[in-house]
Image (cartoon, rainbow, N blue to C red):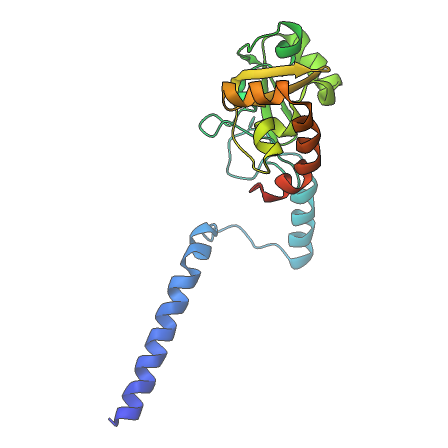
Length: 200
C-alpha cells in the first residue's frame, strides 16, 4: 500500500477510537436492552412527561430519598452527611440559644436540603415559617460574605441578631461581625455577587 493510504487508515482508526472513548460514559449510563416490547414515540414522550412531572426520585434509586435540588436551589450542606447545618436544628438556635443536634425521627426536605430537628414541634415551626429560621446567607460565614467570599461555617459558632441566625467559621469572624455594624450592611450588599460564585 502507498503511504497516503496507510495514513488514511490510521486517521480513521484514531477517529473511531476517539469516538468510542467519547461515548463510553454515555453508553455506561444507558439501561441494557430488555426483552420487553419497545414503546412507541408517543408513549416515550408521555412517559418522559410523567417522569418530569412526578415527585418521585429517579428510577433505580431507593424510595424515601429526598428530591434532588432543582436549578437555583442552594443551601450549604455538610458534605459527608448531606444535611443542612450539619444536622443541627435551626429552630433550637433561637429557642434554646445553642447548637442542638437534630434527630433522624424529625427530618424535613426543604430548599433542596434535608434538615433535622430536635422535636416534632421544631420541625412544624420550621415548615410553617422557614424564612424565620433559615440561617442568613444560606449558612455561609457572614463575615466571609462581607469579605466577598463564600466560606463554610461551623454550626457551633453563631449569633442570633434581630431574630436572624448568622453562622461563622471562626470565633474571630463572629467577634468582628458582632462588633462592626458596617459588616452586616456590607454582607447584605455582597450576598448577590457571592451567591453567584457558589457551585450548585
